[in-house]
Length: 395
Image 1 (cartoon, rainbow, N blue to C red):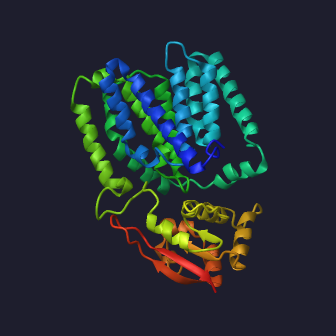
Image 2: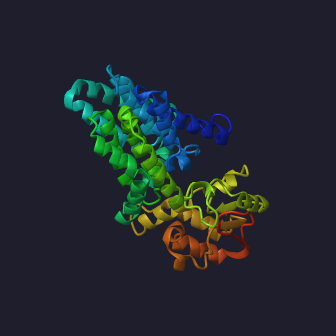
């Protein structure tokens, strides 16, 4: 709803950037006893960390939820905690991204150990803020609940969580070890970090990416900020942090900064791909619906991965994925003028991996039955290798 004020690409990006800068400012503010040079260094270092590089300006609700969550934690992290304000901010964060409820719950449990009445006030404020915002933005209506809850109730798998945890360790191991060695006191920031670990583990849900450790990166940075006076006495931490950042850049290559190395995640839209979609007229089914949006065209079907995973999840059950049948019927009827994929649908089963998860066999069969490969478009821009696009036209 906030991104819908004006051009969603502009407004949404502005909101994300402001939220990201707010978190960096909160980190610097907490580190100010060490002097503003150290404080600004810690805030800037968080801005340059790998999860923030990818997601800091994304048109997604993650950064707004992160900013609100950090604001809620900061409201409790002082001589005079503002419990009601913190609870309300947690409520707003949960409406932006429901996973924010996990850090909120852990933080409120931490407060309840010593101040049960204050924690109760915060919990009431959370519920009131969430309900008021939901009703004001038409959240409780069936369509919103279906999109946010039902369609996102995807399976959790250990083999998906494990690599995400390993990446988080590769990116955050230096600050984690630093905190362990300096033995900080247990505060509300510690509780936030514990909740953030829970969010990271939720990354085992199908479709999760490194945005699931944004909270952990912010919590650890806030914890480091609390130890800033100690860190400022030695040059060991900055050197170790720089080495780790270099390793993370090599591993993930955000924005394609390394030649001859494919982009793991986080790159902006490829102009070549945007141009390919722009010249295909009519109603399109595009694997990456952002390519349609980049051309000012509204996708009728905006998330093939989510559709495919829900199709697989509800196969053979009484609560069948009704919307899935509608999409299949549209494809079989040739309702789309073209289908544009990032993988050869003749080979998707043998390729496996994420692409096989993204293209359910029923959808692949429907496309191959009604459409034929018309064009395979290879990238022409220099830089890291990018895959081709496959354009399928009606038979």
